[in-house]
Length: 406
Image (cartoon, rainbow, N blue to C red; front, side, top):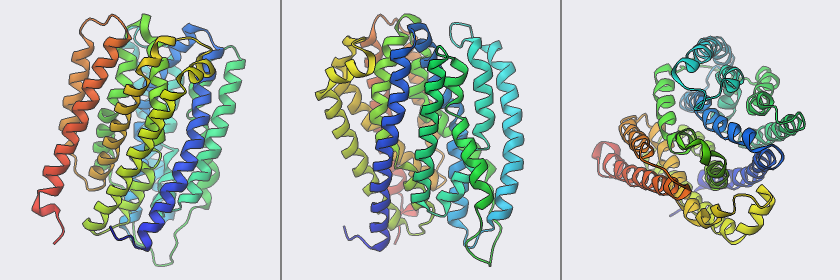
């Protein structure tokens, strides 16, 4: 595969983001294990449920970020000034309405055992900020300012960690621990947004694709189901132990998917299908390599990790580290393909995601006696999603003549 100047720049950005992502992942890992080690089991079980909900309600963050990135990448000489203020007004209004609905409706459709009422207020506020904070990130990524993005991302992570430490010292205050995931990105938005401007004097209007945001949000919600619904559907007596294993798996997953933002930014700025395929290929190979290496490292040092992370608790989960790490690597590859699909406005993939989500819920409705039962369910879910995603890619983009470049 011949690598041109743009591809070399992309590889550099992948390596840079991987390095930053590794450091950021380690800080986030410390954040979670500090909660596991220095709060009681009831707080950790509560936070494990909150993590699943946080991932779900922050999905619009990714969708808005990606749609703005795509809009800027596809529009030459785009008017950033008008875009950012239209975005602030419209997304603030949408976020306010949805956060109110979340606050009032969630207690009506869930039980105290499923979602504690303690979580509702901080999660509602987090949902509001989720619609505002990604505006600045989307603009930066649309302009492919990858170095600036990584620096901002790193500083946000450090601030989140500091807020989390404060929450732990406050006796494991769940409000502070949840808001630690929302406040840093909102503060960076407030600081950065005034300085973002168009790179050219000849400027065109940049469209905000609200339909795309809706479809991408639905897609990412369903795509996130395998690693969020499991935490919610797990029986209460197994939540803490499975939550500990899930955190280990997420080390692998998030280490692999940190480069997704770079992938989407590059795809949004490319016009050639051939070049997009090259970009996807490089990213998938990088994802697989990172995932396999991370899985092996975690398995080799499993005893140290358990002692360091959980103070010797949850020893039985170590036998699942390698298997869980590998399926999370496959899941990370799925995430890369999904970003490719969404960059090309290919949303029939939602049908596959919906099928896998229903499958997971049905499997969890069976009797669950131990962690092994949950791990087996997740293996079936991740494997099914991986196979169907590859088949969708082959039939939609490799065998479909309309999608191939002459």
